[in-house]
Length: 428
Image (cartoon, rainbow, N blue to C red; front, side):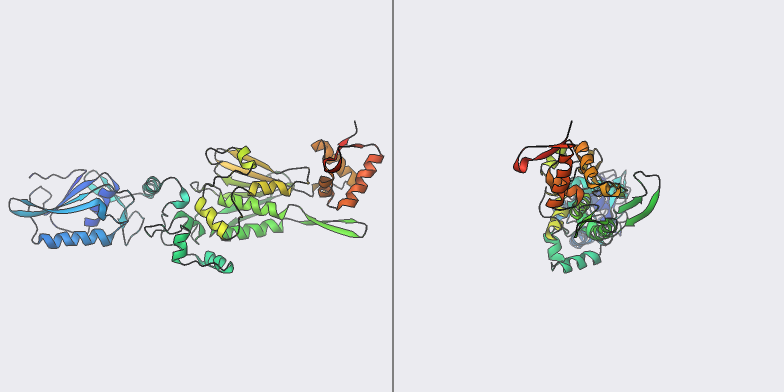
């Protein structure tokens, strides 16, 4: 038989330290054959103990290569001019990238075929193979970094009285069926590669910074630290009517919480950029990377229809009682502004999604009287209800009614409808 090395053929006089690399390279590329007992010049020299060599190769494949490659390989003995030659057939595997067990998913552990040589794969090629074999869902794919720790996540789960052992990680799909950490595990780990950047600006534009903060580590840690900063910038204002004092924040805490969770759970982690939070004097913007999931429109999202981009991560947050159910976050943000004239805005773009929360106490800061606040709100919106007036003034039913009656008596506004359908408009 004639032997010649090529892209699909490797010749080995005997088994050496590179033998597993050759097998991995063919499994990661386009099939191949390895002949043991053949010199580089194509001369068959044979092996002394074919059975022992075949067993040695089998052990290498089973113990030295991951994921399991046994189903994609075959080992056979052939005779060439009375000499025993071992032929190893390697098929392109379905769970690429295959790698050396002791090296992991790194260039020094992953190999591909290049010409007649087996060479280390680049980080980008490893990521590409992961995407091809695991599908497009980022959070279910095998993580490139398999050396993860979970100190913050363990504390968080313990505080919620939830177990977080290896079996629980498998149930949560943080560890896949082959024993690999998934990208969701990476997001929850202390080694998470993504971060949140927060900027506090002076005024309503980006010309001057008051403060910048960056949050790293587990997304659970980033979430807690970002929410603490949001809470520090959510001032509590007071309105005193007679003997009664009513406190109301700049932003509904529930809206801040849901906007933050939405930015973390639903962003596209295939992008390496940061999740952004911009705090201005009159609003807060949450900018998460990745537009709407394909097939959804902004009308669908506003109606409560949801298709999670990261279902594994969303399930973890559900188990931790951070989100109640899919598709309710945006709707509840809207509901938290129900009695306020200015509403949150949601701006999807091809590569981003921006949630903007308006400051609820702007009217108080403008130094306007209660009646001026009502008139300004009606002018902006066209008509408002009594409940909305209560929200604008930060008062209960009866102080709101007094302010409304004052405007009615001055013939500055008119009342339309009856019962719950009552609305107030400007007098023309």
